[in-house]
Length: 454
Image (cartoon, rainbow, N blue to C red; front, top):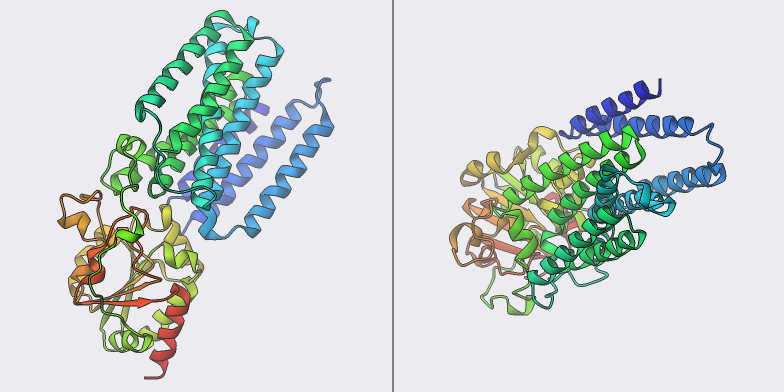
């Protein structure tokens, strides 16, 4: 019965993961995965019911504290902080896997078979790297430390040497069964997680988080092999595979290799004080309202600025007003807009934007030449023409939303400061571009007020 229930949990994990592939089914997918995890936890608790050494007070306390923390986070964390939350979850997952392996080391590593010794080493190594690296990523996204790349002495060679030392200690642990080797391995892995992530710029943190998510799954699968838990093995393998696929997709969306993301120190070369001093066309909400009122087709391009300002409802209200005037309104969504794939889709769905109005990059770009007004709300790097036109640009080759091909471009942005890539955006200085310097939500609300007054 336990084996069959673990299989049921695995099936629910798979169905839940499949459901997350579309905004229409994501809610149900999340629910199925949650039920699967509930089944796995209940079965695991039932499986150890007759074990005399189980400290049930600790087990129950863990369930209560963990459940309460999860419920609180689900209710309180804003959608804009979801990347940080995912980073923290990755860290806790990796740390938990490392602790499972550490408990086996505490018991007696000298009795490990070679197979068990290898998976214990892998669980400690991957779990600890994921733990420390994830919280560095969290700190960068949360603004607790600078998002700029931090150069290490010797550059990538420092991490290469540290990695080689970690592997050597891991071999020592497997061959000798010495507990000291396992603890040295854990300490080196902890440092490697920090030094591996801190040289990477904030612009690439979403890719790093996705990779760490994959590693947390691999660590969980290794921990499952250590203690013989099927749910951990299957669930960890699913997370590891899905996270790796997402990492590859995000790298391709930026037209960069994973190695370039991890080792290039991207985003550290240009600061906001080095932006161009060319004049821009400053616009008022009334100017923008007039352009929108006389348009036939408007394409909204949401970015991280919209997410930070929680402006999804404001943009939907403006779109409703335009549609009442007979204007066709659609939304162009870049694969990495808002720091995470699907981030913008979820925000807009929260504001009841119809799914059929959400266009991906391949469907949106052919429509820009036929668009009267492209309304860019808080986006920067994903609409930068340098990625298409300037071979010397650090983002050259990255697929972008080609908003500069629309007849008129309106950009709502607080200032001319650079995006995560830390580079200037020629779009802002085009004759056809109108810059409305404002908080995204306030700017959209002021445009709506001006529109209603026409």
